[in-house]
Amino acid sequence: MKMNDIAISWIILASASIACADEPLKESTQFRSEEQVREMFQTGIEKGDTPALLRVMHQERFSYENMVQVLNILQKAEKQGLPTEPIIDKVFEGIAKNVGQANIVRAMTRVQSRYAHAFRQASELIDDPDQIADLGSIIAGAYTAGLTEEECERIQKELRTRTRTMSRDEA
Image (cartoon, rainbow, N blue to C red; front, side, top):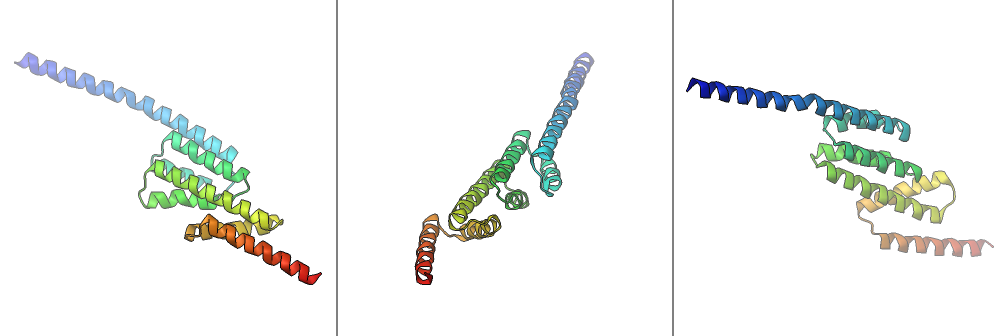
């Protein structure tokens, strides 16, 4: 009987030590991945919220893949000349609401797409980049508040018509 107890104890200890042996590897792999993401963020995004965003994603144990997706969404927005703050805010909002990582990434994608569409529409109305940024943000905010694309298209059409009418009256 004692031999069985000793054998079982050894098996439990051996399996526990084998299970623990994986931990340092897992931690070092995770650390390397986080370092890679940190480097990618530092070279890819030039905004001041990046350290706070990285810190929060690390605290919330975002997976490497989701961190890379977040980076890609932010880089895409930056390349398009879109503001990244609303996209970053979506991460903080999702974490505060205890939303899953995948849903946060999807929400970020929707915000990025909404701003891209709004900025395209703004650029159809005006040429000045500063005014495009202001109007694009207003249009994106209106979309967030419930304005549909069809309603926005109708408003744009009416603005163009009114602008042409006013131009003819001045001539």
